[in-house]
Image (tube, rainbow, N blue to C red; front, side):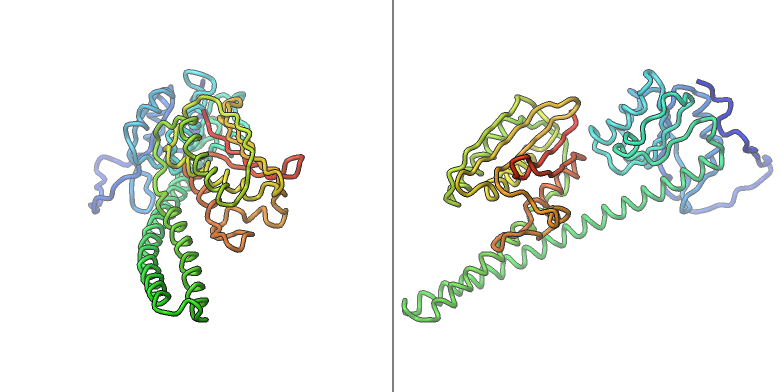
Amino acid sequence: MHTDNLFADDELVFSGDEAEEALSPYREPWQVLIVDDEPDVHSMTRMVLGDFEFEGRPLEFTSAYSGAEAIEVLENISGFAVVLLDVVMETNTAGLDVARRIRNELNNQFIRIILRTGQPGFAPEHTVITELDINDYWQKAELTSKRLRTSMTTALRSYRDLLKIELNRGSLAQMAKSVAHQIRNRTMTINGFAGLAARKLEPDSEVQEYLKTIAHETARLEDIVKSVSAFASIDHCEHCSAEVSDVMDKALDVCREYARGLGREVTFNIDVASMTIDARPDLLAKVLIELVSNAIYFSDEQNPLVQISFKVEGSYNVLQVSDNGICISEADMPYIFDPFFTTRPEAVGMGLSIVSRITNGYNWNITVSCSDDGGAVFRVTIPL
């Protein structure tokens, strides 16, 4: 590939040796990874962006000369804000493979990716750029110094904002845990005194009904607190190995118990391949329990049927859970993953929100549709 036109049309201006730099307090630099198989591109990039600053912080560069080397660097060094990524290196799609592994395998949703290529014939499709959250894409022949600096500014601003959002989310999660703890202490006290009062009253006293209502509503409040705590506790979606069949067996035990509690004789059609996926077993179990429990509740009342499959489809593992009840209404469909949204009066409405939180944390994709028979179909696609 040719790099003669990289940063063309811009004039490089060098200051004289006699120029003095103003002293300024040290600010931690933004970490930038340059991935390209041509050393000249690394040198030119460092020269053009050598004096670049964003919010008073300079850039610090690390170089990788292949896709494999880039992944090794990213696995061992954290904190990169931007990666300038060549598309064609050891293979025609090496850069795209790196981007895909950053998002799906390393599960890094913060680092901003700027693609560069010297071979227009290997330009990625728009869908690929969207799915992999690519920030910018340039032909090297078109990438002038001004355009690169503008692209870097945009990428760093986006990275900064994502970090702020994550920090705020973590603070809110911690606050939710603290509030839940305080509420739980009060509900235990209320329920305890209600039970004590009930034992001191005559069994036929009309006050007994009031105390039963207090106990019932306290139990519902406790369910809300548990659900919020479960949602807030999902702070890290770590990478580990989860054997699907083992997790499925344990999750189904919980779901069968739930079905018995509803008084339903549910038929389960299960088709699960032997596989291991990259997920915490307990978080995968939460996804299974919530989706299957939801299918149990909304399945047909007379002949409840829940179908579960977990198989490889192309480059994805696909979990599918469906029921034979009435599908989610078109009006409700946009809100089903929102916290506390539910069409069941007695429910909390946090189950599918927990599912959404986990799938987003692992960069899995979840979709909902209606089957030909009318029931709801949930599909979770997990990269191999």
